[in-house]
Length: 337
Image 1 (cartoon, rainbow, N blue to C red):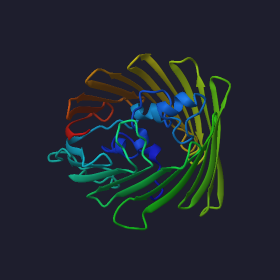
Image 2 (cartoon, rainbow, N blue to C red; image 1 turned 45 degrees about the vertical axis):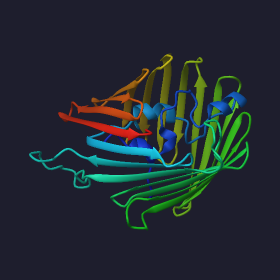
Image 3 (cartoon, one colour; image 1 turned 180 degrees about the horizontal axis):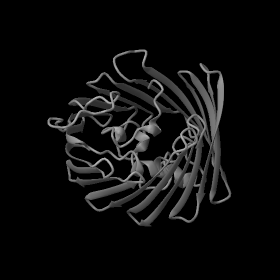
Image 4 (tube, helix red, strand yellow; image 1 turned 30 degrees about the horizontal axis):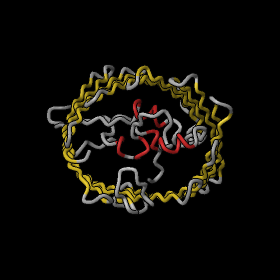
């Protein structure tokens, strides 16, 4: 992804929830650690890059459809899964032209996603020996990744991203994760950079970490820092300083009930001197889910998802009160969604 910062993707992108599988909402408190591994290694911390995923899956990355989206997904076998989706944006007829020349008007798009799980998967409890994923859309954007777990300690990830049909707008990343009982280290080699980060559990409630990144083209080294503090079993406080963006992020999540969560996030950019606050609430029921967010710029969003046996319905709304802009969308998904 030619100089793409996933954390800067905002609600105006109708597909941001699909950009990274780690951004899917997890009912467990810690992202990046499976329930099985958490039971075996209860003190193992989350990855440095995934520290805020559970909060941002609600405050930023929940999918908001503008227009109409239709998706068909299904498994051709226990190992191979395909998904087709079509997005039809709302008509711009009768609307004033966008004053921002850099923002292109939305056009209909098609996306094809595929996933292959290596190994013999006879039961739902079998773990794949490796995972291959790919995503392509009609604009020429292509994403591909492979994840290979060598053993309980080492995990390898290789990913490639192409923004469009121009091969120069691309990035390739190779990651190696080294996990222990109470620590996680990650080594990254990518286009124009390499980095090392670690997360360490201290005591029963505190997790501290740092990242050292070197930008080879700029001959520059940057430091980032992270913290997680468990206030209680239902409440967590997060802090992260991102050196590349010179940005400080504070976040908080609270499990109010078994399936009800409150999230908050505060971002401060030292480059611009601006700050933004986002509040989010997620309520999950037996066959439905509601996610509501509001930020300090008076932008309100809501998403209602209804889940059936082999279908999913989604209703979305975004209201920007300062700009007097109101957008709505709905989606239908069939098959294994």
